[in-house]
Amino acid sequence: ETGVTQSPTHLIKTRGQQVTLRCSSQSGHNTVSWYQQALGQGPQFIFQYYREEENGRGNFPPRFSGLQFPNYSSELNVNALELDDSALYLCASTGSSGGENEQFFGPGTRLTVL
Amino acid sequence: EDQVTQSPEALRLQEGESSSLNCSYTVSGLRGLFWYRQDPGKGPEFLFTLYSAGEEKEKERLKATLTKKESFLHITAPKPEDSATYLCAVLVSGTYKYIFGTGTRLKVLA
Image 1 (tube, one colour):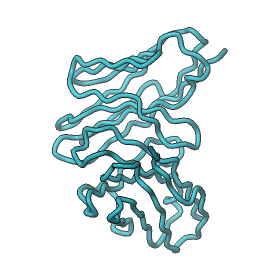
Image 2 (cartoon, chains in turn orange, purple):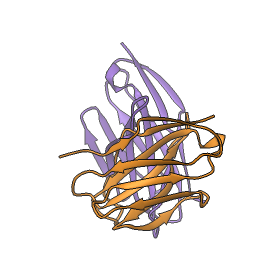
Image 3 (cartoon, chains in turn brown, blue):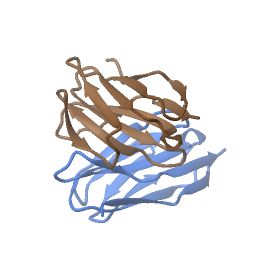
């Protein structure tokens, strides 16, 4: 069974640029959630995708957007990067959109905005 | 407002010294409460899910319990390899939104 994978592991961007982060869900999982984790904080829910549709969103502006593909992999896109976007971005997959199942997290992408 | 608070922020224990971590929550409705372990620079690792008050789950030296207002993660006779940040999260009823606490950083000294 393949776990959740994310790419790249690290990324450095400058303010105003755009970034795309990628996530492959665990085998058999059709639901993917994205989180932002600032240093010393808990993960903050960005949004969730189920069968290629966004079905839940946290308090993040529209410049945070995503996609889910037919193979259930997912992308997180962030436009017009700000310094405060520097964080660890985590992807998590679950077996269904019901939500009660446990989430399995990837190793994260460390984004630094200069 | 839905909220999750964990205490203490940090905890230092001697090897073998048992203790408990607290997760208190205020939500409109609880679909599930989750405990995770996170090592530095890595993604959270799932430990337990609890669904209703009175429920308990155990795994090795860890035991999680749930009441209507809080959850406890009990660590019995911890070892240095138990050192990590322990995160609590709730899934709010009627949403797909998971709310995490800020975590408890546990250090177990040999």
